[in-house]
Image 1 (cartoon, rainbow, N blue to C red):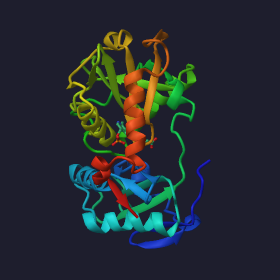
Image 2: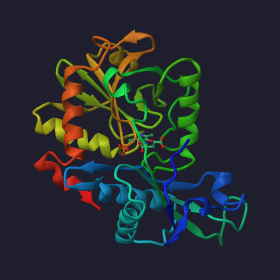
Image 3: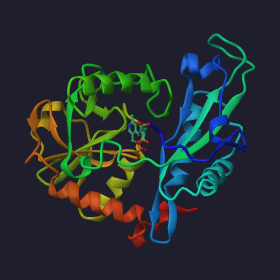
Length: 304
Ligand code: PPE
């Protein structure tokens, strides 16, 4: 169960958690057109800091733009509202969820008069795939469902409806005994997890799928930059499921999942079957960065 905090920012005002409600005929609830973000705040050395808040708000605005949703708030207002929601709830560490959705009014697929509603909630959220997964790694399967194809759903937008596809994959994976799913794109190449980008490592080279059919992951982007700083070669190129099978290491990257090693795919052990050395190095650097222990990457922290 979600761990409640005190207040939710809802259309510009703070309301008590239990009162942040909508009508059952809220448009997005029926048709799925809405956009959201997932952001983490960490208890860093100098206080609570939101990781790459500006990039997340930029993506939120871009997601709305892709779907012609006129957000009634500016980039700066959304930044400040996110910070204030963390502050007012005295959240030391946790998750931030801005969402914009089409409110009550017209039904049907071309709502003309409905208000665009915006909310920001925060709550404590531990390791997405379990605390031990960060060390031991997870077991995944290739989904029988393919990723939303590029002209069916706009993958650069983090949209509510896009996650129906993710949930098909996630439920199938869990119900058949795995922790998480990896979906292939409509051409058969690896795309992403239900809520994470995918990386593999072979012979010391790090590979991640190109942005074609996936969300522009902010964790993905951070890892690419960190890996390059550490001197690794990083390639953004397509790869297949069998290349994953024979990789030395593999991991998921996402705000919620952070860096979660993958220890098994479709019943095949990856590398030695636990977190590999390069994954461990990137993971430990990533956790140092989000906790404010790396000067060079302080630029990514927004202290509340
Ligand atoms: N792909 C998908 C489909 C995705 O949902 C996410 C984040 C990513 C890639 C990684 O993006 P980024 O967070 O910018 O590194 N998924 C969010 C939702 C998780 C949820 O269960 O809700 C997240 O990690 O916050």
